[in-house]
Structure formats: structure tokens, C-alpha cells
Image 1 (tube, one colour):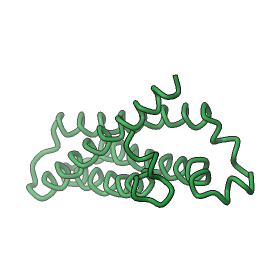
Image 2 (tube, one colour; image 1 turned 90 degrees about the vertical axis):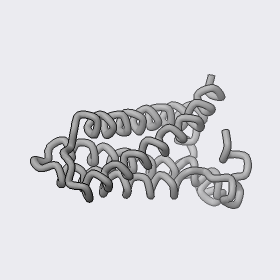
Image 3 (cartoon, one colour; image 1 turned 180 degrees about the vertical axis):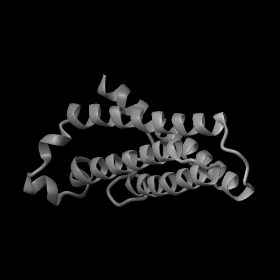
Image 4 (cartoon, helix red, strand yellow; image 1 turned 180 degrees about the horizontal axis):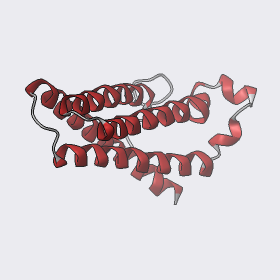
Length: 150
């Protein structure tokens, strides 16, 4: 069961990355063209946020199901690059990235003018995307060759 969830988590990351990039590009284009923030823009932000949250839930299932949470505070595990990454760094960074992505959607909904809505989406989604890209276990990271492409 956990293997299937891990594959889903690894596959869904591409959906999240695609939606994030698409939302960021559309937000910057909307901000620079001074067009109105329409229903499609709001739905795109919502689907981006939903994909982030779904990815987070799958990540929590893996985090507790695979026992990464039990390694916190273990000096030997914290000395190992891969164990420290999955038990601490990945989870904390991704949790912050999801919160920032949620802020991007929520703050853009509450803004009064269209330019501010686009700007808030662009800023918060971009910061969230940078954190996500920095915390993905890419195969070119030392020690992560087996984790990057599932």
C-alpha cells in the first residue's frame, strides 16, 4: 500500500509543478497586461492549492507510515544525509511551501483590485515553488539517486 502511495506522491509532484508554473506565468501575464482577474484565474489558484494539499496529505501518510517521524531526535539518523532529509528537512520545507501556496490563493481572493490579486498569486506561488524545487529529492543530489524518479 505504501509503495502505491509513494508512486502516487512521486507522480503527483509533476502535476503540482506544472500547475504552479502555469499559475505563476498566468499571474505575471495578468499583472502586466492589466486584465481582469476572472473566474478562471481564481479556479486555477484553487486547483493549485488543492494539488498542494493533496500532495501534503500523501506526504504525511508516507512520513508516518514509513517511520520517518520516529527518526527525529536520533543522532545517528540525523548524521545520515538521506535520513535527515526525509525525516526533517523535506517535511518542514514542504509544509512551509504549502502554507505559502495557500496564502497565495487566500490573499488573492481577499484583494480588492485585479492587479493586487495577480501580484499576490505571483509572489506567493513563486516563493512556494522555489521552496518546493529546493526540497524535492532530485536524483542529482548526492545520495538520492534511488529517490528521484518514482
